[in-house]
Length: 91
Figure 1 (cartoon, rainbow, N blue to C red):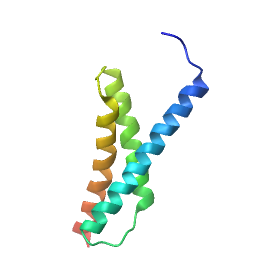
Figure 2 (figure 1 turned 180 degrees about the horizontal axis):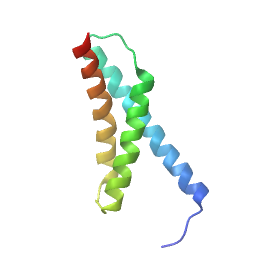
Figure 3 (figure 1 turned 90 degrees about the vertical axis):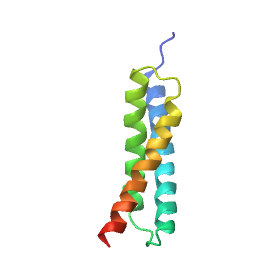
């Protein structure tokens, strides 16, 4: 293996967080439309998506799983969906 610069690695993590945030926002909006809720909490959905993506990416990468990107993408979609479901139970 060759060594990469920390700057390049940080750009990659930023891109992964951005992908997770976009998936989270999309998931949150879709679930809120399905549940006929007002579209609110988009920032929370983006943060949940980004955090879910990065946390799962680090956990699965450390265990050498073969498909970490797909599992991380699913987790970044599930967390905002759960947030919207919790919102629907409160209203």
